[in-house]
Image (cartoon, rainbow, N blue to C red; front, side):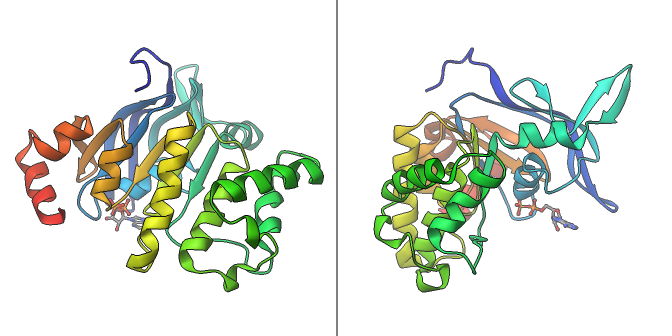
Length: 259
Ligand code: ADP
């Protein structure tokens, strides 16, 4: 368990997100400390994926601020005004963040190795040799050492997702965002992906923000679980409390329906 006084690595301050008239997140405040693994649960449409997409800068904030490592991310307050930060400053902070998606999103025309070294070489400016060496280590970590030269279409969904995890880790992110990473998989392939993630959780200190329907997995790897309903956190608890003795009737009803 990360020390309770460790610095927040992600902080949402009065975050508002609207799509047209639909207010998805309404003045949301929360923080995630360094090394903490936090899972977001709640009914479909409650705003969980939107939170990850905001952190990944795939969605624009309607109002409020996100801080990464204490630094304002996409917007900052200057002279009492809320102003957008320069794209180059945003990009610098964004290199601290990696994301794995439901649909893998691998480059189909590249081999596994090329997929993994692409961003470290072109974004971080690593040498090809250094990037390849790290990629080999990561392929070993995800159990795919023998697939470096394969194209994604030759791999099972579970293998593709493990490559996507290796690709995200190749950027040495401080924060890993996992968005329903097993939802697109056939049931028999879910276990191998979760087992790789468990291993990463056990052997690294990487901060994780997780959206998943796999409640057993959430219970095992999370330090903290946030229950969302209509864009608000209605309960914030350690997993053993959230899953066995939730306080809120809406949490109870949700867990009864999914467990
Ligand atoms: P969850 O991950 O909890 O299922 P989402 O964050 O995906 O919820 O969605 C929250 C709400 O935002 C839903 O009402 C959804 O329809 C809406 N939404 C998400 N993305 C978009 C978009 N690109 N355009 C319009 N509405 C969106």
